[in-house]
Length: 461
Image (cartoon, rainbow, N blue to C red; front, side, top):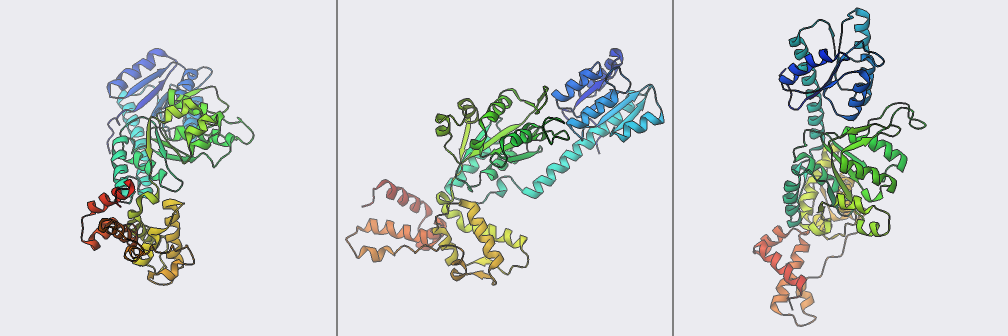
């Protein structure tokens, strides 16, 4: 363990004797920490509520607002914030009371500066390790970087490139796409592939809570702010400090909250419900919507200034219909994941015919709908391989397109049109997997892409 100074640690020193405070501030700053000095308990309360600290070193006996008050305020803002107390009035009773209330350590004046540095270093290291443990736990549970994203289609390759570029930017990101297309997965990838990966990723659905509760959830509240507010709540912006806050379905956020969100984006400050104090936060906002936000702006249901602030960087998440060739790989991925969640299942794979049928389905619910269907099959089918008869009770199987050779008999087709239609039919037969279709046809996959462009442009007659 390193008792050296964790990088960028900010410490608040509190003492109503200015000279004593400066005597501590200077050597601690020389040791590599950023040190703020409060010359009294009231100033300390203001700073604690306005800034994010990694440790607090406070005198115990001060006029009006004492060290125990500072300790209480610090723990109300951040229950894991280490607070170290010092006093010339050492005694078992006051020491026990301070520790009982959650103090990290207790110094009795006079004390040695190297002792203060030692315990501050330990406190900061403990805090860093706890944060690291949370981040590792979250990463192991969610596996949310680019490695968690499945698909090799052209739309997904383009998405990976955009994520790689945008992840290292600081600007807000607006994700657009149909419901179920994987916008939260993209948001997680933006977080875990960027410099904020060690920090928290916090997600909230703006449609899940009514306006007043969403306001409290996002910005926090003080005790007694409203009926039922029996304790302090930090709010998701504070919880996401140093990381990313994902606002899903931002288009449904009540208009009265949109102004508060805009202020956070512009000023980097939040104010808890029922409080007059503002607190600085360092949070990257990633928002998502399946709605036409421009239309909602015109209708007066979404603030134009907030839209322009969010619309700095926009990513369009492709629907499953736009990446059908990823369906075989997605099916394999979801089958393995569903088997892990359902160890008693006998299913090991879906037959090629089932995969081809899935590739031809419309998928209005996108990837989420596909995942749910695969899990349903894994749970309910009592055999190793899922066949078409197993699929029929759970999904409408589309009629396969007629072979173009049969259609050509109904009229005169050019050879080039026949080739193009046959390529299209083979891609559909392979469940949208163009690589597999190219292998069966004995051609390069680039030929399939070229013929598709020709068909879309109407060049094939």
